[in-house]
Image (cartoon, rainbow, N blue to C red):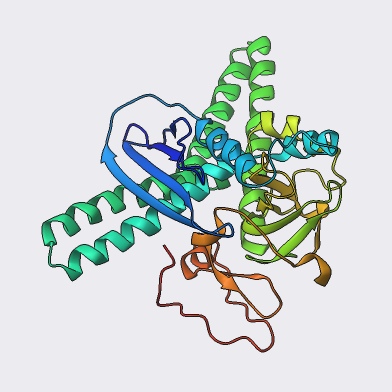
Length: 339
């Protein structure tokens, strides 16, 4: 697989298209349009086609953010510009891509069912094959993100064994300079193995303070947001962690981090942020009013009686999270897909 390319455009309320946008993941191309219907509701259209092309990351976020300014308050550079600039340090392009690929999986599943309903069995077969490719790649990326895949652990163990064997040979041949270098290598490998083990353990024993669909407030920047993903530790790149000043957090990167949808009325530029648990608090009742974001339409069924969002079944399964029901809620329909 050579890369998934996601391309799209956003249509303004007056029918004006902004420039197209795309990024690559494997050998598929995702195309979509966001059409505002009314009061912030969106109708999404997606298509997929085989494509071999280079990566053009980041444009899709620019497209959606640009049009968010059109829909929700114009230029985001307002009286809160300094605070918004600080908040945008936690913006996550990879989290945004992850959400879009999740939507694409939902859409392909829906298209398979539709093809079966109209007895287009060849089309359904092709879509199933494509879905299998996507899910295989997503699984591989998830294991790499967690740093706990069997292949990676095995590679570390083999490298450690080789280094120790080479160290013994260097000592026997009295090549002490090489032995010193190998000791440093072994020390690093042991540290990496310990980090992998700790990360794997964190995935098994983590307890999250917040749940999918819960409305929260950022303690530092003050914006409202909704939880749409979670990791037991920070899984972003080293460069992102440096930009977001993760090491300055009291718990550093070794705490749960959440993918959050940011209310576009608070900051149309931010869109999706990746936030440490220590920087989030549960939203007060007075803060659970109208919430606007283009992704809520496919990630959630709607709101519960506590005015938090109800995650779709597939989102709960993705993060292995139990179903939550606020007091007085009626059962949501887990057999339907909101895509």
